[in-house]
Length: 171
Image (cartoon, rainbow, N blue to C red; front, side, top):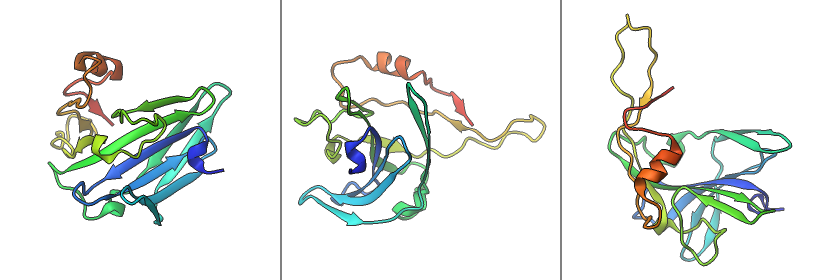
């Protein structure tokens, strides 16, 4: 079957929103990776092979995924302040459950291919290097949290559910 007909996590990346093509990555619970370049109007899928690595861990009750996506696959390395459009989509077919990072509000709830509804990712880089005496490693820092396209759930509730706060650090 097609990867997107399984339970799946899909990542849609549009580094050039002014061009009608974007990239589609999808991984199912057994680690099958689909990577392709996609165009919406007219709909066509082009052969494209990334160096994306995906690993999954499957249990009786849940599965997890870890991906390494080389950004150079999408063109020039983004600079600080560069904005890309992107969406994350999870499907659980048995329950017909579809979860989005940026909801598409499409008539077909299991279709993530609505680029005009993708969220915005802004590259901010790493914070300053810590003092060598601090014993700390480089970490990514949350500089801004923006929720757009949602008029139903208050932004504060979404941020609370995510468990991410301004100035949090990630390794």
